[in-house]
Amino acid sequence: MATYKKRGYKPKTKEEKQEALEEQSTTAEVFGSLDEGASRTEQWLEKNQKAILGVVGVIAIAVLGYLAYQQFIQKPTEEEAMNELYKAQSYYDMALTAEAKDSLYGLALNGGEGKFGFLGIIDSYGSTDAANIANYYAGISYLNTNRYQEAINHLDDFDGSDTMLAPIAKGAIGDAFVQLDQPGEALKYYEEAAKLAANDLTAPRYLLKAGITAMKLEQYDKALAHFQTIEDEYGTSEEANQAQLYVGQVEAMQ
Image (cartoon, rainbow, N blue to C red):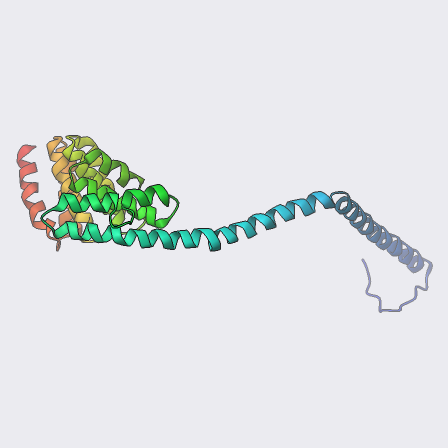
């Protein structure tokens, strides 16, 4: 068993002297190994210095390039695209309440007064948030002017994470498929729209549409499940009373 020795202690017996020599030898070996490892590392770094610096340089240039792109290209482009979007949105807003809807939706889509419409913004500023939002408005504009396939195309291109716009976009695709007499596709999008946001505005609306569409497809169990979900989870919504009536109809059909 090793014994504790004070700093500066000098071995006296033959055994202690032998033990001290062994300790010195082991310590020298350890430090020798460390020195050898460090030397190898230094040699490797020296040998590969140019390659390492090259990689670091590439990374640094990429980071600086990305930051410069964001600051001097992407940001001004986003601002420019948003300015263009403002005029197109104003035409869209007017179309919602005007009698001559088609002409205003046409201006919203194609532009006017020297400004881009939604389609021009999508083509010219494709990588911006403004172009993404323009896909949503273009889709709804086409839906409201009975151009259903164009509506589907643009709404499907819309990448939405907003808890309101995202389910409305999916539900609008469902509406377009209903108009194209494709209830199976419509049901899929209504169900997806209902799942995107559990709020009292969009969820019961698209659950009701999903239930009605399932009835049309004679999928009565699925229809009943959607109507009952409205009653159980969205009992205070406007759709709840309608859901009760449809439950009675589904039960009579089964």
